[in-house]
Length: 174
Image 1 (cartoon, helix red, strand yellow):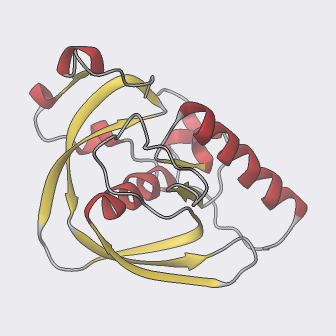
Image 2 (cartoon, one colour; image 1 turned 135 degrees about the vertical axis):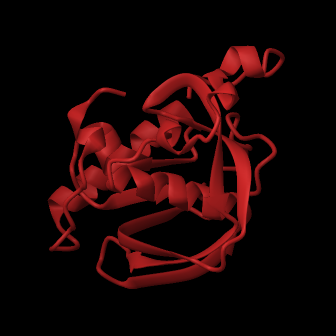
Image 3 (tube, rainbow, N blue to C red; image 1 turned 180 degrees about the vertical axis):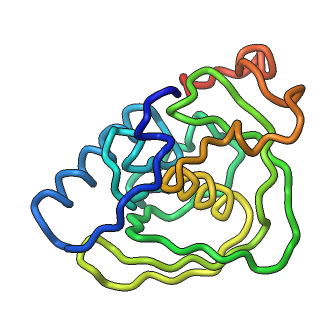
């Protein structure tokens, strides 16, 4: 938190399947895996580009230690995403963030949404999702618009240190 790149609207990717784009994606993936994140956006590693990664690869058999009760989300690289809520139903849920380490907060998110964008090769991606999958997509796409999850918290009583709210759980640093 505090890095100016995290507060900017990220630039769209104009050219796909480049060495630079693949290097960015690899760097994001390495960072996400090292931090055991559920997702990551390019601005979180200091790059103003509309690129997010979320989910787990098939070969990753272990549950995410930061979200042990969450449904598995398929590994996705999503470029230039557009998200559209499917209805008005919202759901509160606890979130953490690699850019706001050691803290958690209750954030309202749309329960179901449609997202579209492109993979690293420029092929279109389009899905309708709900639950934790929808929450992760909204969280990561917020980063592309300069929004950090604490900005969406309605009540500051629902925002604080992870080890205070969850003293008996061994979360990695968010």
